[in-house]
Length: 390
Length: 133
Image (cartoon, rainbow over all chains, first blue to last red):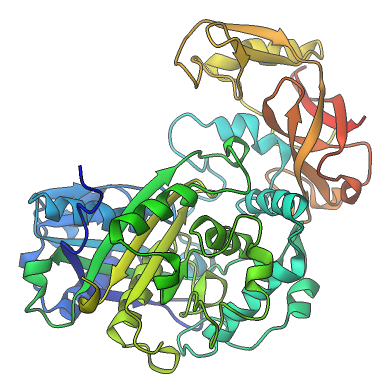
């Protein structure tokens, strides 16, 4: 089988997201999901009646019923934050195989307002359905989740490669510089490396400002065939490459704490797309924590293993840097409702269309959306491109 | 007794937890692969073989990664202060999550040699922890 099977066969044709500088949204639940689907379809110039496939990180049929969608393609993949990269990969494959023609993926979570309004009530329950080895083999030791898991990866990376807290902090600083250019970002005030190091230690070596936000947020995207994409409302953003790899669920089962499954999904997606790291104009790399983003840089091949710390020094990831990364302000400063991967796709599409205002890059053609799910557990890499790259 | 989340016992780990009543650390070994694996389950995660035997571990190992928790995790008492959670590579070659006790949490370093100690649980079982060797 050719490794180019999905290259340029499908396109993202509609996107939407809802976030607020307050960190809270008025709508929640199905109403918020429905609003995102409607906005993404409007963005594409498609109608609800065009949708014949649905991706949802849960029981997808309940959402389909609520929306009035009668799908012939249903994908309930839930692997945490990278679920939306996996949805896009699966949708591209399903459309290419002729199973369906117009697929929508949607995400909404409102943890911040849920907490304030006393909604929800699932806190304290087991983190995963089914048998729960985490309760037996990890929870007794009191690792604060999820940051403790990432802290262990950071600990090992520092010990193995000499990575410093200052280098990790540089990622938070540069991501905040991008957020300053995004009016919808939760935090926009500049921060310094010293600010990060002076913020309260959470789980050593990670400080508060090494950690992502907890905000409300929602988004959706619409995917269709390259043919159908030609006469829709916006320029198509083509799926050039897509790949998934997973190698554990619990952090204590991660085969190598300093190498994520992105070291497999990344090169596979790049190979399908026929691109190299040097070709990438925009990197949207899941930043649940500063260490998460640093590991992606190494595993996707932007620098050798162990050199992520020195790679980020000097602001390479920020505005004006040679590898613009997380231009919306990222999970660190824009929004992070829990499963942030949706926002990677939305921002990548908007940048490739040239819709990003003050933070717009100059003529980007290739963008990568790289999602991380669980605790560095399941990676999904998507390579997207403008019409000139197809 | 330290406040902590007391682990459930799964079908595959009854032998493991019973042995902790006598302060013995057992590891599941795959008879076919002749290797230990972690965590205990009904089948070997290398070959799916279900011939499993339990062997006592040496109780020695090395800190593979460590994080001091300043925001307490599940069931931990915030008043007890920061504590060290580590992944320890046992001499037998499996890596397990644990606490490092018996020293200041910030004194725990990657590569530190550690040995087994036991934290009593409320039902007579014990939780395996480690301290500097």
